[in-house]
Image (cartoon, rainbow, N blue to C red; front, side, top):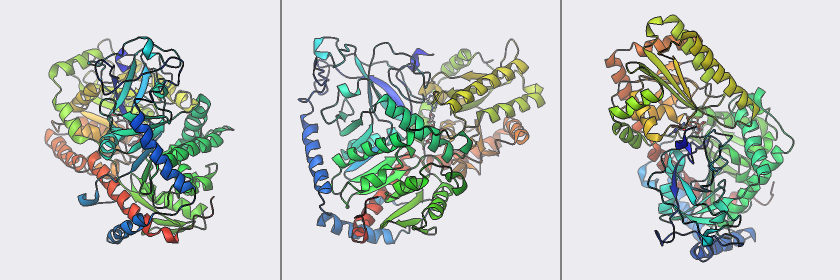
Length: 639
Ligand code: GDG
C-alpha cells in the first residue's frame, strides 16, 4: 500500500475524489477552529452559533410543514410563470437540452448523497481500510481519491483539543477534488445550501454542532453539511446490504448475484427515513431537494410526505435501470418504484435507462399513468418527469493537468511500474467491480498477445483496479479471479525484462493519472454494463496530443456520446475485442488524431458544468411545475 494513499478515497457510485487537508488550528486561522471539549459533546456551540440559528429557522419551516400548513401563496404564484416556461419545453425521456438562462443554482438547494463532500478524520495510525485497500482512518468504500498531504497544517495536540473519545490526534479533512461532489460543492458554496450525507469520518461528529451540522469548506464556511450518524450495523445492512447486494447487481442485470439478507431491506428503509427526516429539518417552502443515486430509492416519497408541498424533489440515478424482467427479482419492487415516484424529477444518464424505468412502472404499478412520449408518470396524484441527461467530466481540468505533465514524471511512472521505456502503453482504470469487464479485457489481451508475438516487449497494459466493497462475497471472488488471471497471463508471456500486464491496486495520484491518460496509446473501457463511465471521458479530455485511441464497450452509457469516434467493442466477443486492440495499435497517426479531435469536441461540449447547468435548469422547471400542480395533488393518503 502506497503511503500516498492515506486519506484519499472516493465513492463508488458517485465518483468522488478527495484531497486531504488539515483543519487549521486556532493560531493559524481564527476563522476556523474545532474546540473539542473534554468530557463534553465535542461540539463547539459557540463557534456554531450562526449555524444553530440557521438551523432553528430551518426547523421552524419544517415544523410548519409537518403541522399541516399548505404551500405559501408566494410560492404558488411565483411558480406559475415557471410552469408557462415549462410548457415551451416538453420534457420527455429523451436527452435533455436546456438554455443557460435558467441554469443557475436554485435557491434553498438541499443535496442528499450517501458520501459527504468533506470528511473529518483523526490522523492517528492510519490503518488499512479493508474495503478499499487504501490507508485511511475512515470506513469508506472504494478508493479513488487524490492528491498529497503536502502543505497541510496540524492542529496542536493539547488538552483543549481532546474530543469525547479523548483523541488528542490532529484532525484532517478530506475534501473533494473531482467528479460529481467537486462539481456540486462550489455551487452549494455560492448558494449557501445544505448538504446531507452519511458522516463516515471518525472525527466527523466531534466537529459538528448539536444538530450534527458543520459549516464547510473549513477555510471558507459557505454552506451547511448535515451529517447522518449511522451505526456499523446500519451501514452494513443499508450500504453493504440492500444497496450493494441487491440494488447494484439488479440494476446492472446481475440478478444471479443478488444476496438477500434478513434485515437489510428494513435497515434500508430506516436509513432512508433518517435522511428524509433530516431533509424535513432543513426544507423551507421553496426548497429544492436533490438526491443522488440508488442509496435513496425510498426517501423521495418519505420526504414528499413531510416537506412543504411547494418544495421540489429530484433525484439522479447514476447507475443503469434494468428491464422489467430483471426488476421482477427485486424485493419490495413496488415499494421501490413508489418511493422513486415521490420525485418530481428523476434523471438517468441515457435514454435506455430512463425508458426501462418507465417500462417497469407500467408493468408493476398498474395504477400509474405512464406517458412514454412525454417521459411523465402520474401516480398517487403526483407527476414525475423522467429525463436522460448524460453526465460529463471537468474536461478543462483534466486537459490542464495533463499538459502540466513533464517527461520526468512519465519516466518515473515507467520506472515505478518496471515498464520498458520504449513500450507502447495500454491503460485500464476501474473499480474492482464485476460490472467493469476486467476479466473479459484480460482474456482479450491474452488473445492479442497470443496472436501478435511481435508486440511482446513493445506493448504493456497497465490495469489500475481499485478494490471496492470487499466484504461482499461477489466482489471478493471477482478480485481473486482478476488477480489470478493477471498472474497467469504474465506467466504465459512475461520475460525477465517485460510483463505484458502491470496490475496495481494502489491509489494513483491525480497528476499521475492524468500523465498516464495523456501518454496511453490505447485506453480500454470495457464494462459489461455501466451507467455512464467517467474514465472514458477523462481519458479523452487528457489526450492533449490527440494521439491515443479509445476502445469503448457498447454497453457503457458513455458509448452513446462517444461511439462515433471510439473503437466500439463488445466486451464478450473475445476475438473481436483482441482484434480491436491490434487495430488501435496499428492505426495511422492521422486516423488517431481525427478520431480524438472529434471525441474531444464531444467531451468538452458536454462537460460537468454543462451537466450541472442542465440539472439546475430542470430543477427550476419542475419547481415551477410542482407549485403550479399542487392543487391537483392528492397527498392526503400517505403510503
Ligand atoms: C458510478 C457509475 C457513472 C479510479 N481510480 C482512481 C481514480 N479513479 C476515478 C476515476 C473516475 C472514478 O474514479 C470512477 O468513475 P466511473 O464513472 O468510471 O465509475 P463508478 O465509480 O462505478 O461510478 C458510473 C458514475 O457513477 C457517475 O455517475 O459514470 O457508471 O457506476 O473519476 O478517475 N482517480 C484517481 N486515482 C485512482 O487510482 N485519481
